[in-house]
Image (cartoon, rainbow, N blue to C red; front, side, top):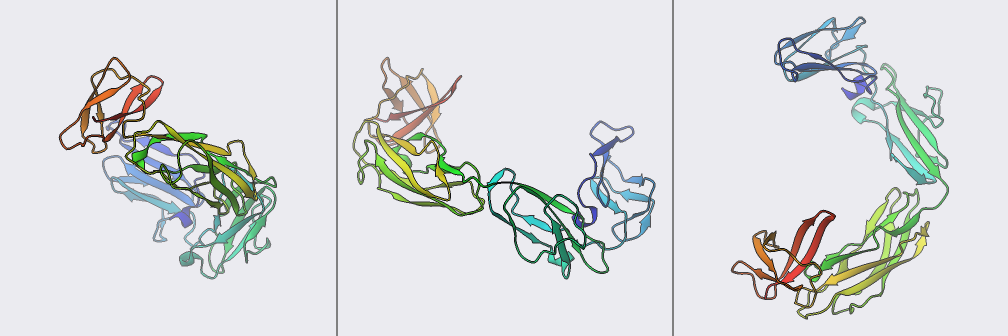
Length: 344
């Protein structure tokens, strides 16, 4: 149906069903090659087609169309078979660092033996336009249009894709300056981003360069190279946190990006992860009003009460062992506040 109707050529239209509520309507939309209908009137609908020559899905010339309730149908302006329109890949909504390779392809069921012609200046292609044989390389902004032709069939509808190409290399940086989490979570995944995708492979090195946490005791030392394939804008790496049994204060791990290829470093080249202890060493920074119902890791509710000071004690269900960590969450006007408590 997509190949026969093409793209929408106008907005949706609807008509209220006589004697029915507002939701009972007949919907229609004019497309490049015909008209699509959706019957939502509560009964079979006999549609009188507008002036012109129309054919049903079986190739019969018709002036009316009978559509059962909660069903759709369509008519086309030509009974002849039409070649499938070419696909244009990849598509990029924003700016891309060039050069960028574009590929054209066609549905084999409707396009076997068809020839694809294309343009890059925004004009509609004809059979005299360049013939597609291999990937198209774009080094500057362009509007790519493609059309498929085959003897004995109608030419396909024209497919279009716009590209904004820049010669400037992207910047690479951390998405955030840092994050915080309890050590029982096990892992953090720092997210690294490009300012815009690139048509080239982009790499950047990452490594632990500082912090108060101890390698081998609080986290596993990690370093490596992140790779962004052409077109990718984000990548991440795992940071393994060790859940020990020592009561400790808040500890930090500082990760740094360096040595990018096909990119330059952005402003956020350092990322600080703060480890919250779950063995009684971390301080609860926000007092809680009592009582406060929360959920612990098992999903069961735990009633928590705050004392006059900054410590929080928990009346936990049976089975929650002493020293177990609980994440407390409270919704404030300024956003969600996350705190930590320890069952004693």
